[in-house]
Length: 269
Ligand SMILES: [Zn+2]
Image 1 (cartoon, rainbow, N blue to C red):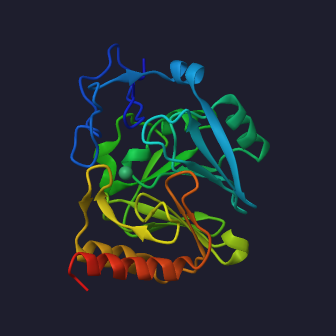
Image 2 (cartoon, protein in one colour):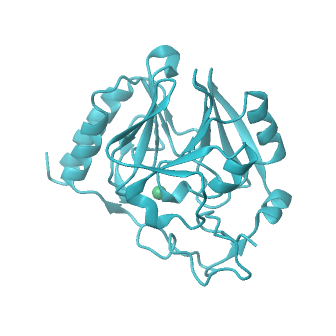
């Protein structure tokens, strides 16, 4: 069986027994739930949950799991002239979600912002013809189910074709990255940010943390580095990790003023 951690949704390598612990949850950025370490398998998820599909804008749809499972993030299908990229990942893509992706031409690649969203990436790569999975090499130690199609990228940026580009920002994880989609927002550009730049519930601001559930902030230099890494890009929209958490307009100004507010709050302005 390939055990899946119930708290973070990470699928582990094939083993006769569930692992003793989930290293991703048993770490200061995550947590183990009140009931202790619990495991499930994909067959049970298929029975108990479904994948909700949301049309975000032309060329972009998102997926999340209902009822909520694991961390509760969304994944995105980004369409480009070089094919479709699955940005970030969730533990369950049910048959309706797989059919929807196939009807749009399948996947050309998978790219994931950071280890909390690695989830069942190897499973979805296989289903879509063994597509490459792009992960930043600095986070390689957090891969719990290795796969032949995982391509670790190095340095600060990685082109995916069709104008799509991964940018390493760091902060939440050393390799924490965002995806720039220049064709998004009717050609004004969009940034898909996972937890690297977190869209907060008022959808007017973003924030930056080392741990979100355990409220461990980042220091000033880490925040300045995140902002500096995307400053040269054009983007109007920011799609955050969670369903509905989207900055619709003026994303660049929102990022800048959010960093200013954050730095002021920690006494570093
Ligand atoms: Zn995270």
